[in-house]
Image 1 (cartoon, helix red, strand yellow):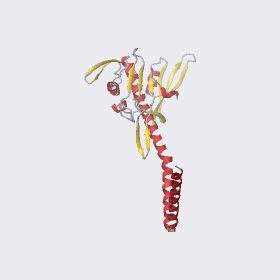
Image 2 (cartoon, one colour):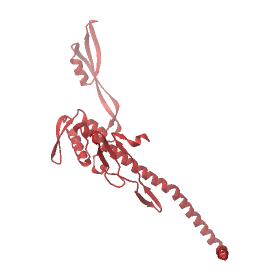
Image 3 (cartoon, helix red, strand yellow):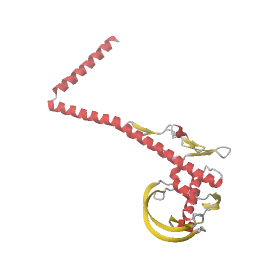
Image 4 (cartoon, helix red, strand yellow):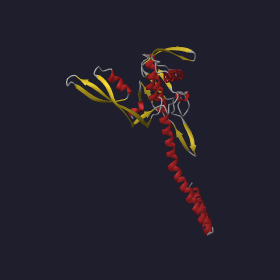
Length: 276
């Protein structure tokens, strides 16, 4: 054994000496070129080791955020369905169709409230739709933006009789609706003057980027597997969870992989990640 170790050590030294001898025998220009390329390759490897993982982590965060966003959309749709029917459903496609159909009807007819019937795939479903439900849906299934609008002002100068002082009071009213309200007052006498102006109002526009409840929102963005919808025995506790992702791993660059883990769940309208 000792003889073998000595032979191996001697062989290693001979190889090192041979490499050194070969290196020293190279022309200066060739050796410099090899060193330059070695430095360049080392720099590229260093950059890759630093930045590729950052890109993968960003992609993993994007998957996580999109998955949670989709679960929140499903929860909102379930809340609307429960408000109208007093039930939850585990059929995601039916849920989206019914809520979308109701929303579309309310966009065209704001009086579509109270006890109504909505048809999905040719079948009627009795619902109880609250007042103002269309506005709530608009603000939920859209991304609002702040806009500035020029508003025309119509200022009316009117007189009201004051019995206590036995004289007329002068009031200023903005808009026809305010004037109509004043004119219904028994103290109203007349409009003395009308002037016009304008001002800028900042408001939130929800119509510009309203999104549809497409079937893809029912699926996890990583694997395209559907989210899990379950209801407890009381019918009052809904759980929305992501499919199992513990074993998901996909190669991205060289030996770097993207991994997707459990993105949380929503239980009884409470996201588990809100406690993190």
